[in-house]
Image (cartoon, rainbow over all chains, first blue to last red):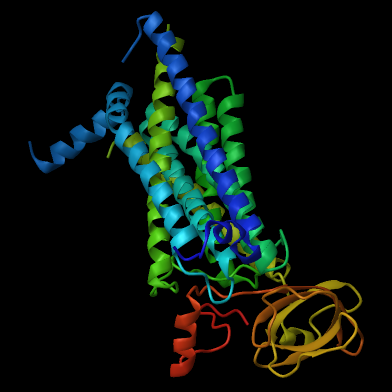
Length: 55
Length: 242
Length: 153
């Protein structure tokens, strides 16, 4: 690893708050988008299956 | 079957929502798994193993999110515009569904590019935002995406919605070269291109590799989202028809 | 190609062409407004308004940086390799500020072509490398301060 310790990985010589806020928010947003899309799909699939209307 | 006939056959199959539904269903698993693998590998490599930059120190690591998001925000828009053009010319409903999926993931990428760029700007440039050509045109791109999504949702008739949003998408393509060349054509705070240029990338190899992996990750995320979201649209459309 | 489809394709191409030309003309007409900053050459040529908030951009001239010992006041020259002007600034300078580096300052121009800045932002180029690589390039004499491949100075 480039950093000497995990705590150095977190602080990144003062830039940690910038880098890690980007990482956490980006990952969170992307996860949310996909989880949402998945939920919508499953809901729709159930509906179509009930109405017996599948491709 | 000759090559020409094979292509024609493939082209017509492509327009079939049923075919796309099953095609996307088959491939979604591996594209999303590979996307996840690339995402976490690229980030881990870039954040913890790549060396720090001589000038920007560790803040440069935001590049591993910012550049893929920004690059894909443009690539996805062009793909969306092409889908709309094909949809308008060949009157294919499926391409508009794909375009709508692309609009959502494209808007997300654009927002992430703007956000990560802003956070990166504070410790390096000294500001969260400036109205230079690059930043402003990327913000305009976000508005184009949102405009496209609004038009396609707000208009009650599907065909009118497709036509209106499709024309917006095509007209907005002019913004893409503006974003890319903004740092060349005008004086700006944002620097020039590091990788997207007709020259050797001006980034050290050990910093470049995780960046390429993240580019692949974001590309696969976009493809996966299109597969997932378009399948939902296809299912929805089958019920509407009743 | 199906004649109706060709017609639609042509229409799309025409629309794109017209939009490109219109947008191109608008951007060309507004180009000075789209530039984020004036260059020192433009300032010397009296192309920049005095007494209003404007931005100036350029490279910090090596050897020109002066700072008062017990205040945040500093003074430095900024050049575009042809002309240079002096900028006075009171405040904390960004981390990336150094001689030979690009900056963008916001402030007002005095009648004597001195620039009083209230904000100084640092520019950086598009090169990324670890410190060892930079030192190696410097040792070999391949290093130029803040080299920009797409120089707009």
